[in-house]
Length: 317
Image (cartoon, rainbow, N blue to C red; front, side):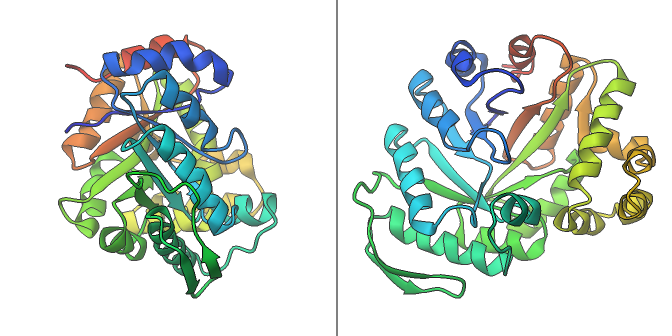
């Protein structure tokens, strides 16, 4: 099945005002609605609303951090959405970043690979309704059992960038979720997980023919994200280390303005989809053509009507 996702909520649009658009998404050709979680809304609430507005949609979190909720609470939150959307909910989990985990949520960011693996294993057992008592490497659980285990249990996907986490996703999760890559990067990521695993990626889309405006916004996002160590390492693995080295040098020196300015146009054009609505739709399709299972559009604000833009970016049928 060809999948086509959108990120909700849209920037600056109140949650309750999404109903009209979300109800239309299945008829437009969208199969999925995915949330995110940084410092805006939490990942679960938008999906609770969408589950009632568009029962045909598959719903997913991309992603919920494994550190910012206790394992039991994470299982309960996932079970609630899975109960509302039986067979249509995907729990995407991942490490997030030290800024979000430690700086904003006062939790230690330690052993990210092991914590992801342990949380995945715990959730697999808990969401199946099992009573869990286990000494994991990064936490211990004593006699936890969900009072309302969902039937069926939700799929669990793992946020993964480089080979170690991608291979863990392939071995133990139902899919991998990645981020900040170009269509031409997809085959390298796909090679790590094999041909059959679901591979989802958030795709940043800025539908405007004002290339300077799109690149300006793209540079701000790239310098904010790709200076995070895990994303820096990801893009070095993908082969952009040399192209992004001047940005990292300026960022380390505290010169954010220069860090933005020295990001090459080619890197921005690789990582940010921009152009006319038709051109953007075709570039999103190119991710699929290169091996991505599930593109998840993240609409960047252009000043245009966001609902109209989402309608325009729907897949060709």
